[in-house]
Amino acid sequence: MLTVRRMRLLPKNQDWTAYVWLVYLGYFLISPWLLRAPTWVRLATVLGTLAALPMYFLGYWLCGRRVLWVVGGFTLLGILFAPINPGAATLFIFASTALAGIGDPPKAFPYLGVLLAMVAAEAWLLKLPPIFWITTMFFSSLIGSAVIHWAHRRRLTEKLLAAQAESEHLAKVAERERIARDLHDLLGHTLSVIVLKSELASRLTASDPARAAEEIRDVERISRDALTQVRAAVRGYRSAGFDGELKVAMQALEAAGIQVETSVEHPELSPTQETVFAMALREAVTNVVRHAHATVCRLTLRQVGRFCEMVVADNGLGGALDEGSGLSGMRERVEALGGALERDGSHGTQLRIRVPV
Image (cartoon, rainbow, N blue to C red):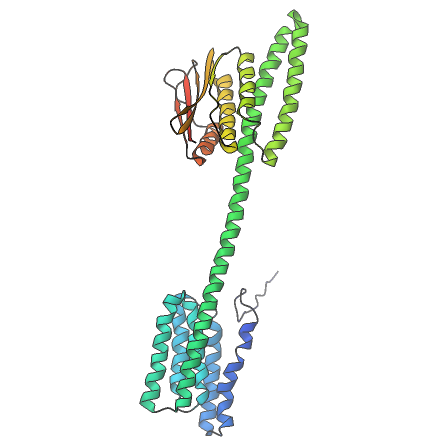
């Protein structure tokens, strides 16, 4: 299907008022008839009006130094018609308003000064009537300055709206990333505990049915808790606090047959800092249960100078480990608070997190 494109005189972001200002060009056009000027002056004025119209609309499409072509065109017409048509004052006014497209006022005002100087020079050289050059310079400076400032404010508003839209977009992206990190940490840890307890219940089915049933009930409880935590994460509430995460972490490690050693001093933390440490503990313990093949895990939280430091260390395999989404998400949370995360895999695995408090 053939698509027909309509020609536009003005950009899409320009309102209809641009057509209203063309009424001032009518003063230039009718002045020769009002003053009963010779026929050649009338004909020249018509041709000058036809030349001014495309320049007027072109001025709305150009920006920066390219708009000087429009300014120069209006100025040239004004200089040529000033001796024969007093309505030429409007051509200089159009030139001054076109300067708004150059940019900020500090860039536009020097050109406005040059334009006014040219009007004054022509008036002096050609001995033009004072009423012409006084009104021309007054209205060119007044209207030109007003339009330059108005255009500047409009550009600032557009930048502000664009920045606001970008900020909203980034906020949505950050929220999606937050939900993804939280769900990864929540489900990864919880599913690991469910797998461990399910395996334990399976082994106890024949030898200790009562204990197996208890483990299955724990699996049901943990699953319900996980559902609640997922809903809370989507709403934005990430953690039930460090103590709650520590209790769950100890249960997961004990279910995996890993001995737990803890040393927690409970330094004063803001809710945001406590949430970060709690989620970091959850991810670190999940990695120990899944990958470390450890028998002992040490958990410490203490105040060290102006930092709060948490260490999760195990005696497992250690070694180099690619930083997956869990560890990278943990690092992002910590660094967002001005902290640092260090991992040492030389003797088992030691994860150290330091956050200023």
